[in-house]
Amino acid sequence: MNADVHALAGAYALDALPPDEATEFQEHLAECATCQEEVAELQITATHLGVAVSEQPPARVREAVLQAARQTRQLPPVTPIQPHAAPSRRRRVWLAAAAAVVVVVGAGAAGLTAVLDNEPTNDPIANVVAAPDATSTVTPMRGGGQLTVVSSEQLGQAVVLSEDLPPSAADRVYQLWLVDPDGQARSADVLIDAPGAADLVRGVEPGDQVAITREPAGGSEQPTMTPLAVSKAV
Amino acid sequence: MANGAHRRLRSVPGTAQPTADELLQATARGDENALAELYDLLAPAVFGLAKRVVRDPSRAEEITQDVFLSVWRFATRFDPAKGSARTWVLTLTHRRAVDVVRADAAASRREQRVGATQDRPYDTVLEEASNRLQGEQVRECLDTLTELQRESVLLAYYGGYTYPEVSALLDVKLPTVKTRMRDGLIRLRDCLGAWR
Image (cartoon, rainbow over the protein chains, first blue to last red):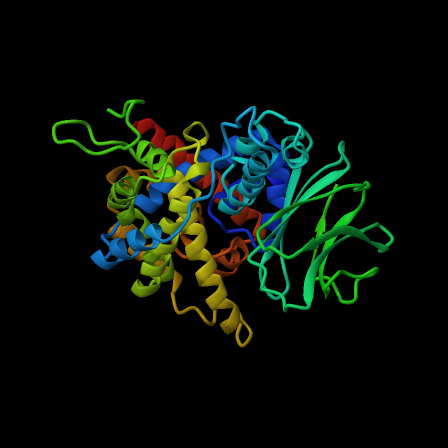
């Protein structure tokens, strides 16, 4: 991309980009190895500034952290993948891999490759995440939560993660849509009832966007509300 | 120190202390003691940075808790080949602190323009930054930056300001601020590298 985008590496490493520019830069970062390296180095540099203002926190914070950890389950690891593991197990592993994209992007680390470096497998979600042309977009949702779309134009597929969705009423469900460049929405045939899950969307055409709405239980033919978020796909 | 036969890492008297990277890897295996040791190692930096950015000590405590709980949950995702544990944790800390500051600022911005509503005057940010920095190397290296580079970097990092806000505060054009942040950090990186 152009030099102007590269110039944002410093501001990005300092968390000084406004949200829209941060998203744009993250998209660029996913495709730019040089930028990943530079951002990683500048984040190390920024870390020195953080360490330089160290201050001992009150002892109660330590207790609270350890107490909370005892009551909190850790995310499952992404690797190694057991070659003969049952499909359900593999799926869970790769959900974690896809979820990791969110973490990595969210943390601003130049570590998207941490996920993308993994071997392709016969798991569809894994394949999208590991596709050489996979790109990741994080979009905040109106009313809370965020939508992360990892998509591969080559595969014509996307993995969609919804994080921190406000719980929907019992008779409502979140539904995913593909929106073509003319604004025509078609159902992605994905209903989300478990927040935080990763869902595979097939049949993604170039120029499509991914949108999410809240719909009556069972889903709708066409969206019945303005999308809570619209994300670039391939 | 850590050997493959043992799933747990403990600091044994007379042996080298485990590094943050090693502790984070042990944490990923569910070792609560490793998390406690990692906390002892990094919490001062996490709390200090959070407090510098948000100012309010009790919110800084919340951020510290939040960050270490995330470290616990996501430790399985840490790959030492991609960066150090310390950078990972402090990057997360800064992001959280900045989120808190910006959520607060959003409300007051509705009434008044940025610059008129600063409860954290920027000269205070800069003054405190230079007075209270503990690392001699960091202090010396910051002195190698131009004034504009230093102000841009410090207002963004310790002040939690976006680059358009920094541009408004310093009355400098947007592209200039972007560039100064980047070349300031690069100069700081090169200077700190020379110390290693």
